[in-house]
Image (cartoon, rainbow, N blue to C red):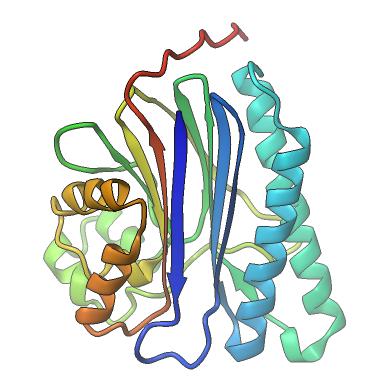
Length: 256
């Protein structure tokens, strides 16, 4: 059985919440979740995240089918994200008050024992096995990540770098956008966490797995949100946990 638990909070500093999420369980072995973290001022970030989340969720709910080939599933996700980008970009071009707005986007589709991830920006997806530590699946599209890649800074420096919130890729800021895609196998008892940076900046590496297991046991992500708020809550906080509960039997993915 698939279960999804999600929540969002403004945090203790921001006046508005520019994070949005949506999800839907479409069948015994088919579900999706999408999370966006808006940017571009009080109004712009809100609009960008809401519109992108709604467009992608509607497209995935309409077009996903059990047993799709990996290439077909990826095409559905690509089309949804391209459409969301065009929508947000068009709105921004027509309204000077919203010029330059954009949003991160992280989407996950679970199908027959595999999860497929698409990402733009610095919202993240983590894989949490039934036992063991979490594994970050996505790579941030940020200035800090670029500096890490070329060896100019190390992980410790990245945590306090003044440009750690500067993203290099977002939905809606240009006429086209390129998302990263990946696939990861899942076993019964495994979980996927989608979250905004308002959560992961306040969690020590290696501690997320136990926290997510607590969320699943409680059927709520309140513990994750409370942790970020207790650490200062300087940003909006959002989390979506997808859990493939033990006892399910995965189907076989069709060949390409």
